[in-house]
Image (tube, rainbow, N blue to C red; front, side, top):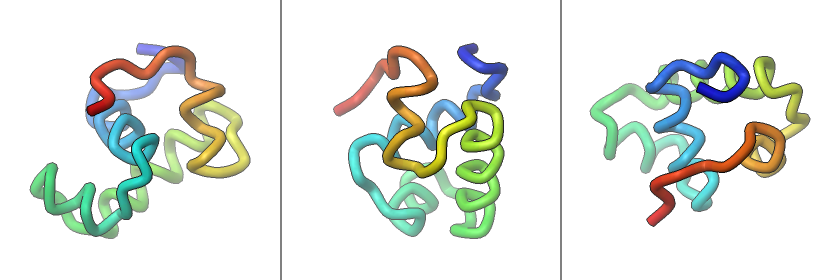
Length: 66
């Protein structure tokens, strides 16, 4: 995984990259919005991105965008 992202963090990143809200991501992945928020915080720290909008560009290719 790029930047040591977990499979779940990569799933969250993939959905965040399409502009989905934490609530929408949580519903799609059967998680709480707080868990999604935590995953976003972790992937931002791991990638060094300043925002969730920047994260897909710093983490390398994000596959599975639909």
